[in-house]
Amino acid sequence: MSGERKPPLSIRELLLPALGAVLLLVGVGVGAVVEKAQFDYTEQMKRHGGDVLDLGSTGTPDASEQGFMVRVVGDLQVVEAPLDKEFNQQTDQPVLIRHVQMFQWRELRYGGAPTYELDWQDHPVDSSHFEHPEGHTNPDKFPLQGEQFDAGLVRLNGFVLAPALVHALTGSEQVTPNLRSLPSNLAASFSLYNNGLVTSAVPTHPQLGDLRVSWEAVPVQTVTVVAKLDGKKLVPATDATDGIGFAVQSGDMPLSGIFPDSPLPPDAPWLRRVLAVLLATLGAGLLVRWHYRRIDPLLAPAIALLVIGAVDAVLWLGNDNAVAARWLGVAAVGAAVAVWRMRTLQQSA
Image (cartoon, rainbow, N blue to C red; front, top):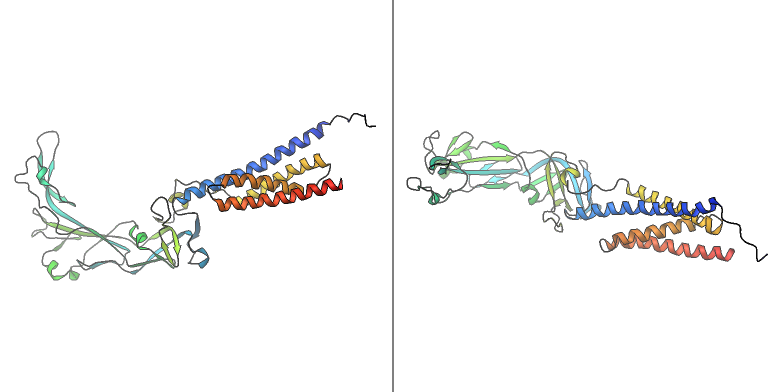
């Protein structure tokens, strides 16, 4: 009869849509958390040149990885050794560094009148600013300068390091100069003393203006390099917002140690995305079951993809439009299937 009252909904019938809505929201939330973590990681890594492919100690140059930031670990191989041409000193290490010091006056203050002493300094000391410059006048400038000399070619697991990366290598190992390699004009002025060269007539008693030249080298070692792959070369990323675009660390260093300011990428992001879709599909399935009194295997996942795709697209929109477009495509597919299935179900009702 048209006037009959419909029986009240049972508790089960009331709980069904509520549970479905909760599961749908949980699925959307799981998906949003994954995308937010991925977004934060991607944005932070842009400061250093972009997301990093971890090639470890076994990776070699690959055409499919061109233009990507990569992490490479291995032992340095010096192909073209560095050379200090002025002193004709060379080493089989990747970097050779010359240090120059001069024996000069320096002014000391300990609360009372200043005192003066002669000591080795690696920079010119301006004695004109001394309180008592008389008798404590230093030479105006150094006749020689300290300098760093980098190897012309350094390899790492088949990769070639760009000059900027070689220059950034760290570590220290004393190098004893080779007197027989000195040019004749310098051999007449310098003598070997304590692993360095000095101009002192009596090395144990240097005089004002005497020079001391020494060398150190960055040793061949295991290093971790993060840089952009360009052919067979590892080069700085020119689009890095930090203005550096690469990192060089001694030893086998994980990304978290190289970039401690960067958040970790989400663990198993695709597995979590699948979980998000499954939860949302289950929730949408309960809602479809409540509304149409039947389970539809196409409408439920279509609704899940529509909602998750739309939410995730909004998260990426304006930050990475390519990713946002992919999620919009997922939402569009879900919307098309959902509309088609709802029309089909209505026609068959």
